[in-house]
Image (cartoon, rainbow, N blue to C red; front, side, top):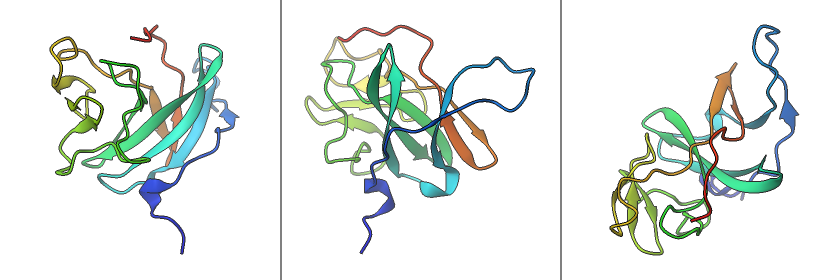
Length: 146
């Protein structure tokens, strides 16, 4: 029996180029198809960031897709409490199991947890959706390994 969709791990995606010649020619990576993730599901993927492959995750939160680097803002640890499980039990927040920090899924902002984490946000991975395909680009902002 195949594993549930939300537990699938993707190999490093292959780079793709935008087809519109008027758009900047930034490298982007095919991550998934929109029908791969139902509401409340998540999927990890790897993309090169700062010269090394970084683990990231894609979520479908209330029918909208968001992607983040897979690391908590309190301590640089992975966010999934079980492989590919990022949402809390109610599906309202993304939760770091190490110290119970809660993040808003749509913005990545920490809303509960250690004092020095609240107000910070997860590192967003820019995504684009074209023809039912979700592409990710490396974040343009620099981020610390804190």
